[in-house]
Image (cartoon, rainbow, N blue to C red):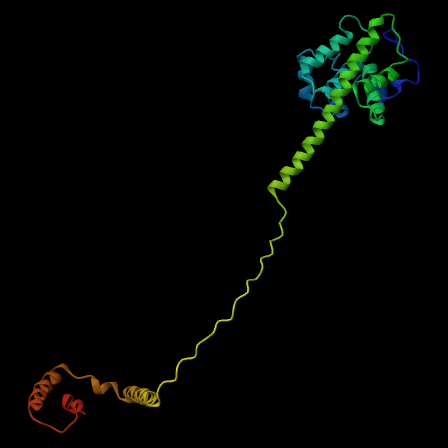
Length: 271
C-alpha cells in the first residue's frame, strides 16, 4: 500500500479486491457495463449514485479503483444503512484526511467478515477483537486513524450481518407465504361410524280369507274388461253426427219402454 496507511504484503490486500485489481491493470479502467457485471448492479443505479455525489465521476467513462471500491462498499451496506448515511460514514473515515484507500477498507471488511464467521464470539467486543487482528499491520502517523477505521469497520460488519439475517428472514417468510397460498392437503379426521340399531319390521296382519277373495275377483273383472276394450274395434264407438242424433232420439223412446236388453245395447243400436 502507498503512503495512505501501510499494509505489509500478504495482508488483507491479497483478498477481496485483488481480482478486480487484476482487471483494472489489464484494462486501465472498467466500463459501466463491466462494473455492472462485477457488482451485479443496474447501470442506472450506479449512474444515480454518481449523480448524487456518493461516487466520484468516472474518468473518461472509465471506472477506476476509487470508484469501484466505493460502489462495492455502498452495495454491501445499502440494505441496512441509508445511502446518505453511508456517504457520511465514508466521510468520517477519509473526510478530514485520506487515511486509507477505500479498496483497502473493503479488503479489511471482507477479511473481518470471514474471521467473524469463524469465531464463536459475535458480541461487539468479539467483533472488535477480530478487527484489531485484521488491521494489526496498519500504520499511520495519525493516532486517531486506527480508531476511526476500527469504528467504521465495526459498524460495517454489524450492517452486513443484519443484511444477511434480513435476507434469511425474507426467504423464510417467502416460504411461509407459499405454503399459505398452496396449503398441503390435511388428512381428513376419522369420523366414527355410528352404531345403528336394527329396525324391527312389523309384519302386516293377515287379512281374512274372504276379503282377499273379493279383491282377487275384482282384479280379475277389471283386467277382463280392459282386455275386451282393447280387442273391440275403434270404429264401433265412432258414430256419424247425423246418425248419432237420430239414434239418440230413438234411444230415448226405447228407454221409456221396458226392455230385457242390456244397457249398452240399448244405448248403441249397432251392437
